[in-house]
Length: 543
Image 1 (spheres, rainbow, N blue to C red):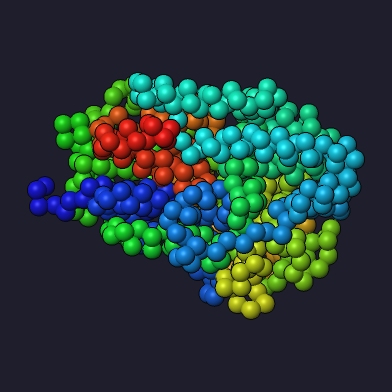
Image 2: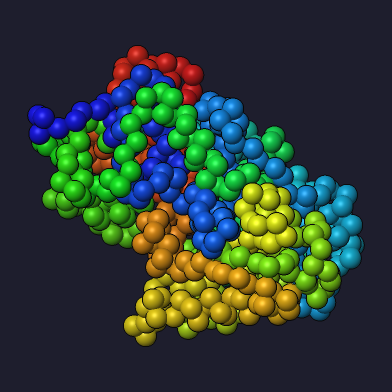
């Protein structure tokens, strides 16, 4: 062991949160090594060629939640990152031949809502302001370590500070916050709107990455989780990174390499080395040992504690709590190469228009979403799945040959584990055909325009990216797995129950999405532990 390479800190997993954590540690003067299992860093935020001449964001596919502080601190814009906003956020083809467009400003959205309900159009400004108020408060909390039970005085101070922020909200906002955390998306939206189309447009976010019905209690929070973001200073907007999501992690790689971080690819970690109750390094699958007094894992906590740490090194109560940690978001991803743009029945024409540059959502009602979930529970996947289509080549011509396009199909309500002993390896092509047929039903030229496709079932997402059960959030965003209970109560401050071992991925607060917040927050706690002076400075600044 004494001859093994030594660093101050080892990061397990080169996904975006791991890269962010590495940058903040290196910026503080630590010698950092990143170990990545695959041949490229970026985790699920990568761009790959999937058909000759066609590239796309393979898994993560759109930008909004990336923290502006991370962008600024790491200098990502100066390293080539450019994000452009969608002209409108979503386009919903409806079953009656009509359509609804969401976004493009308050007045325009009201005009769209008025096609379905004057009452809903009038309610939109107040609803939007309500979400903004709640999201602003939670956006600040997303950048802070939760008040962890078990951290003594430090945890109590965090509880007081963060509780004071919540207490400072008007009573109406506090009631809305409670409702969003506990209610179903349908219950919450029913109080504001009457039109099925409007509720579908707003409720779609509640089931993204959430293997649940819009009638499931707590699904309203997932709706809120997707409101935290911004693009180029515009809150709630969604955008595209030129070059795909790999442009984000590519810029991050340049940033950490500029600080001297060592990046090791094709370097899968087999075991976290623990000596006398302390993490001391890692053993790679190829037999190499790397030593460091700090080890931070960007993996799903179930992978870290289920495969990389010996059960004998974990307290019994912690093992039991982690056994109950729930994964599985019901997501199925496809990337398709297209000879032409979709020609929608409700809005004819294959010439590029703003609806092609938005998120096309095939989920015309909350009832449709509920039936998709019930199907998935009974049969494994929905006979009429929920499909979101993004066509990034309409904004970025570097992704496809001239005149042709790439599309991301992000599909919901595909069971992480299939019934009747089936494997996703047996039915992935059949499920993919169902998805194509679902799109073809609203855009009849779609099926014949497909030149090639890349299929990622929940099992494929697990194998390729370590997303257990296809879980894009590294663990379900339920009330018992959020904030001070993420991943489990008593370990929300990024510290494992082993000295020197930390968690910096989306299985920690504030959860999934390409935000960088878990990595940034984890680095702050690591530096707090490393230096009493740093701990005092952070305490005085309220960080």
